[in-house]
Length: 234
Image (tube, rainbow, N blue to C red; front, side):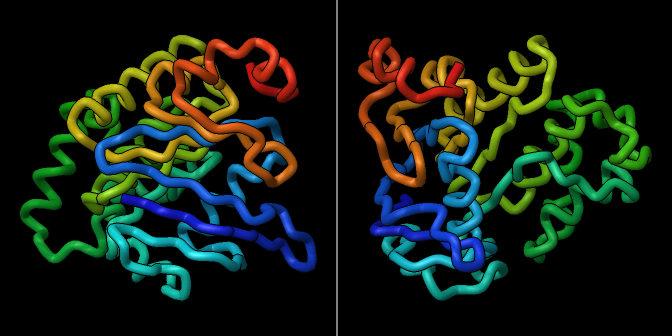
């Protein structure tokens, strides 16, 4: 589904990611793990087209490397960003409708809004509330649902558990597990390696902007020395 080759990501003159390559197969959940500053969010930003980069980014063998953000969304990439970034002054319902802005099937968009209200009843109860008044966990649910409103081929999740209470983290990971079971292709960026590896088919461990190790979730999860070496993974 997604193939990245020799990706370098730049923030001004600083090279944050140093020529990494990774693959995400259709219907698979692949994790991108590592400590703060490892280059995980920079990689996500490059895939979405919001960070300066070189290298090749292919979705279903179509080269998106030079495409603008909108073209990448239309091609099937959607992201739930780090920090959630909901539209605080807009209602919960309006946030979801905006998530489907590239779609022309408005009746189906409205049906999908209802679907997510059924999936997350708390969002339905607060459909007319400004999104900025939701709790952190509720905003994360909204951010993921909003990302799915475009009916993407691949969902990028950037630190979905960040700053959330343990009980809410469990709910978020249960949601991701359900999405995977339904066939969604997922690239998951997480510091919570243990939780992420339980969901993942494959994982890449980043450190200092480079792929430090890669392998099946089972193999990486059983490597105590490797997990300990990457400071910041819990």
